[in-house]
Length: 435
Length: 191
Image 1 (spheres, each protein chain N blue to C red):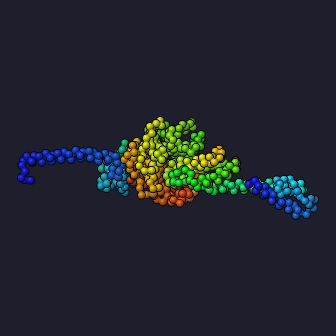
Image 2: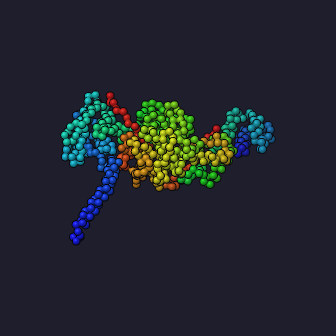
């Protein structure tokens, strides 16, 4: 090498420069790609925001109805898909700094003479102890949970500028005395309430627009039929002009219903007005169609058809035109549901008789398996903020409801007891007023 | 079948007669006109013969016995229809050869006994979603219905319904349980 002349040296330098430029040229898109991925997977474990949780100061001995406020807050934080709780017995700046918790929540609770509890809830900046958010609630002991959920949603809004789901609910099917009944509960599985009391089969609950009630399937006439029930009101049979109806899906904008009708052995999707009782055929296809699901702004619809010989997910405009196939991998892709953020769908796929939950992009690419090696996993439903997915799994021996983040991490069981299946997440609720 | 009813009626008649005789009443006619080949008339004859002992109560009992025999006959037919389920292959709704043999027997019964309305329940095994399985069960009940119609049964008497995977016959998560649950089941309603 030393024998080579200066001219060569220049050449070498040029070559080196070329290499550097080339490397730079290649690295740029690669780095961009990595960036993009990091944004896409904005929900992965590494992106969770640590938040300190400190027990409330209690004035007078308070007997909590189920859990103390900081326990509820810790659960809300860990379930949210946004935070990672950093619990501490007291304010501990060293711990909060170490865990990178730049904010913490705490407060005080006072027992009032009329039996109510006054909750003062605060979000603080850890370093300065500045109050970022303060809320006060005076509630009956059994309303403490709701109040704390309400506060936590305000914390989410203060730090993310988005609505949280701590005050939302789930509808699902619970086996009670051997009969499948529709129940509702808070999104974390607490405060369960039985909605149906019929002795046949009750299933497929979905929320009406504005969470006014539910639509579900009942078998009291020895066939599947849709019913609507309003909370605190009565039950009404729907679309009785058809002999068998199921697979309800509520339009988030208008409240109208898409559902499956079986007549003469063929199952097709109809679009109906629940109040008027009228319905028209939504799709004119030779195949059977089930499991309709609206896009967030109701401009498009997902459904399952066996037109290709096996159940696969298709999309179609809300006028019933422009049918296109979305899933191609595997022989059984069913019950798709559109994410509230609009960018992905979640569905159940079956392989070797085992069901698992997948997501994919709207064109069917970028398939991500969210559950594996843990029994059957089915009936996924998005939280209204699109951060979480609730589903049913028999991984623990019998079917229970679980919540996970939209990337499949943070799986948490929220029900126990006998069989619980078919969760459907509510829409957002208006702010709760405590009297 | 009708013959059977007649025979049972006759037996009842003879039984009653014997009971009448055992009472110490002198028999006026030593040669009762109960002709074995005309059991339908026997009631009448019996009336004439033992009018004094045969109260309205006994007649009612006789009628009850007749109804009971008829009921038992129908029940036996219903049991035959309901005991045999039609089984299907995985995720299929086409009838197997075995299923067609069974359905031909069911069709014969239905053609001979036109008071039956049959609910054809389509069921699936536990694999797959609730929604898809209801549509699969619907196709199975329909395949059975279409076969029976083709055989000559009036379609108005065949009501298809689907239970999807909601009513398994056998609990379990292996093929032996699955194969028993992929079925069409009959329920009979007498009009």
